[in-house]
Picture 1 (tube, rainbow, N blue to C red):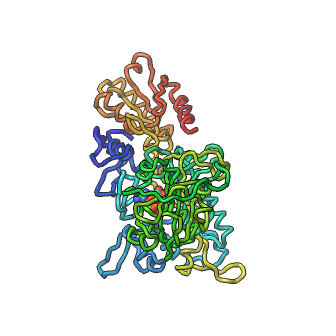
Picture 2 (cartoon, protein in one colour; picture 1 turned 135 degrees about the horizontal axis):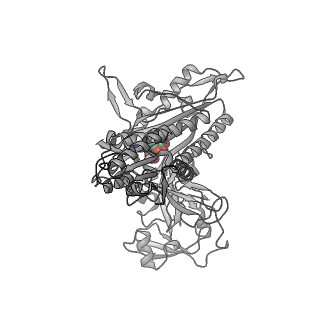
Picture 3 (cartoon, rainbow, N blue to C red; picture 1 turned 90 degrees about the vertical axis):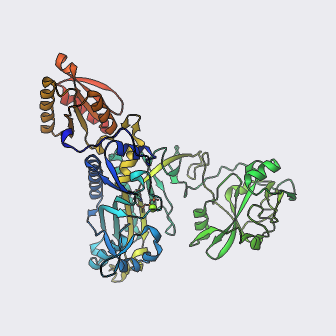
Length: 570
Ligand code: ATP
Ligand code: MG
């Protein structure tokens, strides 16, 4: 395309509400525009990039056995009632009525629709496996839409769903989708990690989030460089290198006044004890039961881990008003000694001696408390968030923490939806069985934003070759100079003949503005036809990522371009 024929409204300044680099650059480079909160249009360059990402996704999905479909956006309430999600989904589900006052939603995800299709059509195990996906807009009324395409309300998603006859086949499909996703994000030129994520009630290692590594990511990832283990901090297991010998404490619990000191920080300063010498006690309501959860003063309780340890359906901290009746004290003075509740202590507390704890009396703490002798937990379990330096659960080497953006999520659903929605098939033994399902999502717009978040500099975007709106920008430095303009036009035609993905900047504006725009939009390869072309028949090829400049004659141009292109694909 010629620049003069494409709608590319670049801007010097980003809009005020743009906080992240990708949000700012998507606007400034003219890829998107905002309609209303969390709702965006893709302009030609943005759409081109989205189409390239989508093409890579389609290639990956088809190679690993999935087929594309397109489902309706608008879904009737009755179907969502079958799955129980009309009530359960909450305010993210946009609900509205048609002229007959029937309720509908714009799908935030499509399990219900796909289950309805498959239960009506696939009646026998012979028709399985089925793995169907679409690439389409979704609507989720996010409470805080932000960061542009990263967390929108209307956004483009690839959502896929698989149907298998049993666990074994479903696990195999899951593995195929894992491979497909790894391939897709590699093809997109992204530095990413597949991390183990929370599986809720399903259990097992059948939920992975694909995270693009970027300092600005919303998610914290715990990872081990030694063995490759990686997990979302919500889920990361912690290994233990036993740091202290088992054995009793050296002192008896002593009650000491701690007036007005309710936080770990304040108690630590007041009693001159490091936070790691304090045991934090939290009263938690799990289902209908109250339990006490203990972690070291410098650690954070992980409610998701505790929930799965207890096998509870829901979990939350007890309110401050509930605590005195259960423990004798308010939050901030509660402790495990003499407590009548079931106690779950974090594994790390096996090794703590002579610690400080609340005394179950407002404004008092105990010193000299040792688990095992001064109180006995019902169990020790891994119930805290991992931190930098914790031992890897696989190889015991210290783990690091990095930040990431979740661009994809694969999840084994099991029979949750097929049971609720009566989606069954006739198995080989003649019995009716529910389908074993999996679901697989990719945020297409979020992938574009994440790619920019990971690849940019002060001048603008640095697009990975495969997802750049155009691979090559051809810039004629002075359109008024007919020698340059004619040569550039001819080279552009040859580039098109040879199938290059090129945009030709034929605008009659200053060279500075052209080069600035090319850097801002982040085309991976830039070919400049300027003064040296007239004198020496030389053009300059610049690689956006490295800043490297190569000169070339017209004759060598295509050979050099393909070598550079190959280099960028490695
Ligand atoms: P998050 O925790 O970020 O809200 P999610 O767990 O709700 O994500 P899924 O339901 O698994 O997301 O959706 C699949 C993919 O869709 C996500 O991995 C993400 O890339 C993308 N996605 C989800 N919500 C949004 C959104 N509001 N805007 C853009 N992309 C989104
Ligand atoms: Mg969400």
